[in-house]
Amino acid sequence: LDEYNAHMDFVKRISNMKSCTPFRNLLNGYVLEDFQCVDVLTALARKESIIGHDTGMGKTLIASAIMRALHNQNPLGKYLVVVKTNQFQQTPAKIRKATGMSVVAISSKSSDLENKMYNGSFINSDIVLIAAEVLNDVASCAVLLNFRKRFRAVIVDELHEFTNFNDADRAFRLKSIMRHMEYKIGLTATPMTSELDQFTRALAMLDQETYGNYKDIKTKLVHGNLDIEKEDTGIYIRRTRAGLGIANDYITHVHMTEPHQHQANANGINMFEITKGEGAYNQVAKLIEIINNEPGKGLVYIRHHKVRKFVEAELAKEGIAFTSINGLVTGKAREEIMRKF
Image (tube, rainbow, N blue to C red; front, side, top):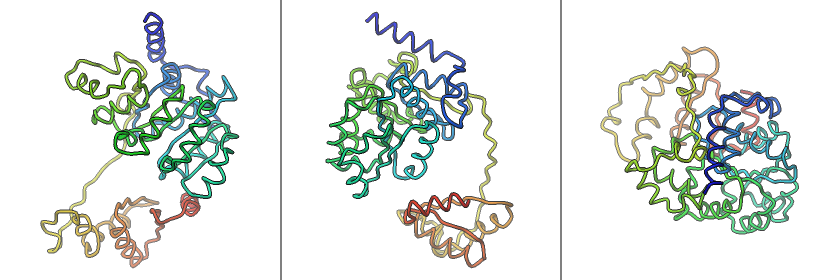
């Protein structure tokens, strides 16, 4: 108990630091901010941490710095990184550039599994980055478990989406693999305390010994009998722009449009298609007006394919140049579109 208390006091003292200048230049081509340096050190000291920063505050860079620091200590260690498919195109190159370490990226394609996973060749790289869907493959999980002693750390992007380990095989397998890692780091931009079920299950994935009874932990949190961030420094490292005094200079506008007769009182599962898709001429006309009035380039986010197809057709009629990235666009095409943009 004395040793544990001494260690937690050590973690707390690190988390209270203002910066760590030697860590600022730990990565290639990036200079870490003061808070990022402190967070890297805190996670290294705690060994099991959720990095819960707002979007755009460098969670991937913090994860890269953690791996680089551990690699500097022991160049023989390996690192497993799990990412969602929508991050699979950009993340490997970013981590490779930042760390200067070798990275192998393994998707759930049969060619990747055959040529990189099943034969064990992935272990020749410092960092093994896998798409989350790889965890659906039992054989791949068996191979990873076979090499478990070679891995020093596992880093899971969007950890909150893998906490349903009682219901989903993929999450359960990830939890099983994580138990064998010395360092366990979860990344998420979703405030975990807003979803206590997710939060407590995430804690159980990171630290089974302390938070294995996640239902009891949730009860204590609900009744105010436990203050995680105060009593277990470093397990949840949360940063917000407001907390760091970073101004959000976005100016948002809501544009009201007159509904068509067929759109009035729209509800149910088809509501978005009715109000935004085929026949939503008032709405797409407003979008075109905004595009024509704004200088430079822009981004339009559309969730549903049917809506996207309708909007694309209307933009084409107006002679507005656009390129679309959607679930039907291949990885190489995505990279080329982003490069040109």
